[in-house]
Length: 176
Image 1: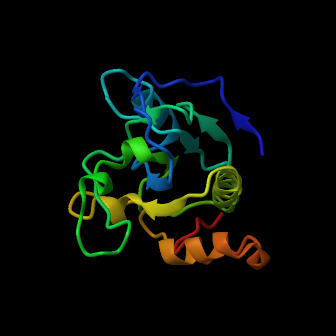
Image 2: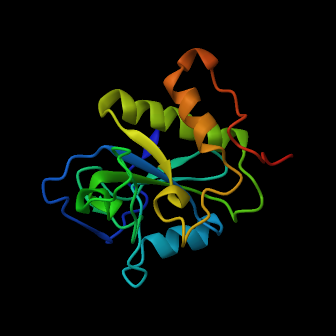
């Protein structure tokens, strides 16, 4: 998979402070490519992501994986399933990689975009064992992204490569 690591660089990142990556958080942008990239690479925005996947399937890396991209904001998730949220289960930026999908949240996703997402996530998981969560799962009071996206089915598909690239995890795929 080709990843463009040179075209765009976001200034919005910090140190992981020794925290290991154990999660990938999937988002949708709520906008379109040129506006998204300008915002994610603007110091004024104070937001970023590690990877941005355009509707045509191109993948851009905006922040190096070794750094903490500012994509998750105030967040929490019961990682160990004990029914309690510990300090370690809050503020996911330091423990995660963020992937943004170009989408207004109502227009679905393209096959090329979803294919790139699957390939990128499988590549990451081959290098670093991670869990995959949607932004809405770690910030349920604030976020709805990725909209029209079945995270449970997506996780199953990633766990079972024999399923191939079935796109049933996206509830809405753009018709051309």
